Length: 204
Image (cartoon, rainbow, N blue to C red; front, side, top):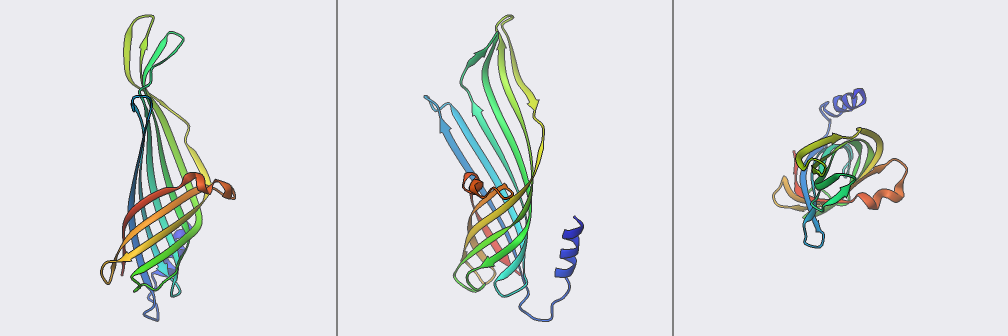
C-alpha cells in the first residue's frame, strides 16, 4: 500500500506539458454454462473490472486495477454418500485481484480503433464455500442451505489484459477486453483463466 501511495503522489503532481492524460476504464463480464442430461446444472461467472491508467509517455501508461469475480457451480444431480443423500450442491468462489503494471496503446488517444495491452503484477485473494441440501436417510429429515467455508488463499500473480477501444465521442470509447490472472511465473497457465468483458473507457 505504501508503494501505491507514493506512485499516486508522484503521478498527481501537475505535469509541465499537456501530454499527461488519465484513462479510466470499467467493464463487466458474464458467462453461463449449462450441462447435464436434462440441463439441470449450471456454472455462472460474473466479473467486474476497474482500472485507472496514467500516461507517462504518449502511448505508455502506468496502470492500477482492481477486479472481482464470483463463480457459482450449481449442481442438482442427486448422489448418496453413506446414509446421506445430496440433493443440491453449490460451489461458490469469490476472487479479488489488485494489479499494478504498464499499459501500452497501439494507437493515439484520438484513433477510432485503439488496441491496448496491459501487463503487470497482481495480488489475488480467493475465498470459497460449499452450500448444499441433503437428506438423512436414517431419519428421513431434509436439511437445506448447509454451508461449509473453505480456507482462503492469497497468491502472487501476473495479470494480462488485451483490450480494443472503439471511439464514441472525444472522451468516451466502447471497450471490449480479454483478461487473465495466473500464478506468477507459470505462464503456461495464462490460457486457462481467460475472462471476457465489455464496458467503457474515459479520457480526462
